[in-house]
Image (cartoon, rainbow, N blue to C red):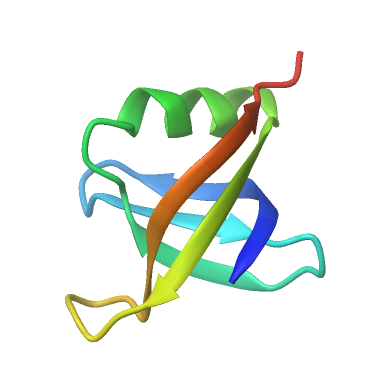
Length: 75
């Protein structure tokens, strides 16, 4: 699923981020390795990330970030 997402919630302890899609669908994904700072900024500043999510059977979530295509960090 490719869409433009806003960060709804970031849990650094659980290493999980909840993304909100353009059609108000909420999806929990593992925090992508090496991208914690980016997702923290998006959570704080209200920016968006254009990403592709893929279904997975791994861990506690049903989706994971497969690719990040663009980022708008807002202002």
